[in-house]
Image (tube, rainbow, N blue to C red; front, side):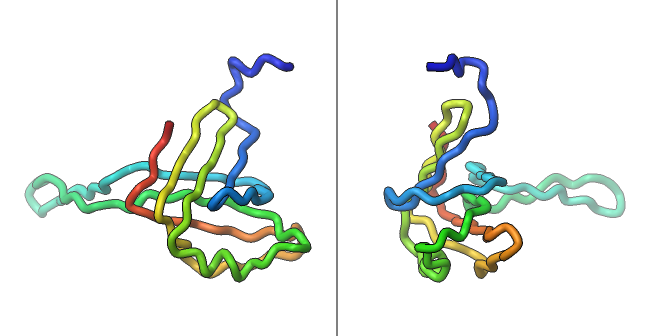
Length: 122
């Protein structure tokens, strides 16, 4: 078995409620709990505002022959697990999809983004 001690990027796996899907690339995630915006007046910087931020897991997937893309749009209470090359595991609970999925037939790919209150890295 190859030593992967120094591997930081590359291979990734994603499953939804235990079902693995072909990840074609561009896996991304956010575990941030808040977003901030600087408040600037005409005289100086006044401070910042802070709002809750939904965490997310997103990626580009391959439209395999037996896959039903419409099923992704119907996901409203799923657990999403991403396993990264650096050994991290990203877990999202009670996730829902946002945006409509659109298949690009040249590469047979489509984008999916799940959001939730609970996205954590381990």
